[in-house]
Structure formats: structure tokens, C-alpha cells
Image 1 (cartoon, rainbow, N blue to C red):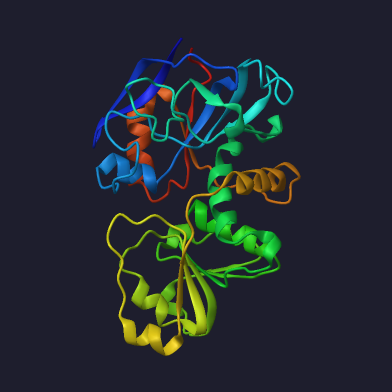
Image 2: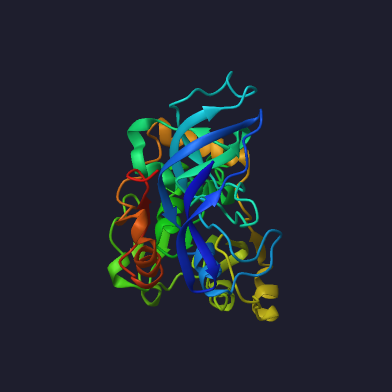
Length: 314
């Protein structure tokens, strides 16, 4: 089997080409991707060549970890849970032979272990690509714990999902956003320019901005014993001045990638309608326009989420 896929040949250079697929095994499913989202965090670092080294890192690679499609083939050990035609979310794949699958979701067809996918309601359509970012937000602050951020830094897609989950948990967070064009769309929470905020008593501040120089400013806004949760991804070294953090007995927590349980919990919130995903996808491109799609996603502040449409391709 072969597939059409986005290939980062090297930093800043993209191609759309056909790749051989690893033959599926008994525990695998073959998924035909309908839509894939472009991440403006980790994928931007891959695009610019600033991504810190991780296992599997290198070029050429197939990016993408926000994909949704339908099952085209089920391995013999997967038929008790899935069937051909099921709509599923795919958090990436590694099935392209010598071309690295980091993260491997920006392709028309993928071969993936059934244990990595989750079923989604077909009515969600392209919105299901947002489940990965929603799971990232959920991993930082599981709704069931009742511990929610009262200040969120950044009102992009991840910040908006973080705020929506906080509201589900009974919170009413403040969100900082320096770009006036991104301050719309709030429901149940407040979005302001940080210069307008004089509070210094936040108990839990969640940064999703990816700004490596922000820690000192956030420490100044903490209540004694408060915490800063780093839920973005940072390409540069982070540091902070110790005395202000010492005076507040500040805590810094890193929220890493979502786990399978987070993905399932988030999928349930979305499927049952408790977590709404509307208003977050702002741009679309056919997969053949991948070059311009990535340039817009990384360069246009008005682009919250870019989605590639694979449905017209084989």
C-alpha cells in the first residue's frame, strides 16, 4: 500500500508525495484520513528546525497528530471493538518505512495500532481533529479533580479549550491575550490584555503561550503557595529569578503530553456534548495546498486552527 502524505524534507521545506506504508498486522487498523489539523506549537518547531531532540526526531518526516477519518480495514484482533466504516480520531502514526512518523498524521491513509485510536461521533466531522489539544488541556487539569486554573496565558485554540474545561469544572478563569484580534469568543470567562490586570493573587496560572521568557512575570502574579503550570511547548531554555519565587514558595509543574486515559475522557466529554469544539477551526485547505496551509497556520495571527482536507484524494 501507498499513501499521499505531507513530508517535511528538512526545516522550511515541504513536499506532498507518495510513501510506502508498513503492512498492517493483526492488532492494526488501516484508517483513511478525512481531515488533519496543523499544530502551531510543536509542528512549528519542526518546520523551523527548533524542535529539541526527541526519540524519532529527524528529517524527512511526516508531521501531524490531529487526524480524523474512517476505518478502511481491521486486523483480525481488532474486530471486537472496531468495524470498517467507524469514524475515529488518530493521534498520529509511524507507518512510513524510512520516513519518520513524527507525528505521522498528515497523510491520506495510515496504519496504526487499534489501541491508539478512539471512536468519535461522525456528526463532529472535522471538529474531531481538536480532540488532541483538548486532551492536552485535560491532562494539565483533569476536570474530575476540581483543580482548575484561575489565570490562563494565551487565547489560541489550546487556551480556549483550557478555559472551556475550567468552566466545566466550575471555574471562571481570566485569560491573558496580547493580540486584540484574539480576544473574542469567550463564554463564561474573561479575556483581557495583561497590562489591564493588577491581580497578584492567582493560585494556579497555566501558560500555553510557549513563551520561554514569561516565568518571571508570572511569578509576580502568584498568591503565596501558588503554582505555575507549563502546558505549552518550549523550544528555548526556561529560567526565572529565585528570590520572588522563594518569597511566594512558588511551585512550577510541567504538564506533558496527554495519556490514553486523557484522550478517552476528552473524547467522552466531546461526544456527550459537554465540551463544545465550535468556533475554533478558522481556516481550511485542500491537502494539495499544504505548502500555503502551513505558511498561513504559522504566519497569520487570525488563523486559530488550519485543517487539511484529504477527502478528494486516494
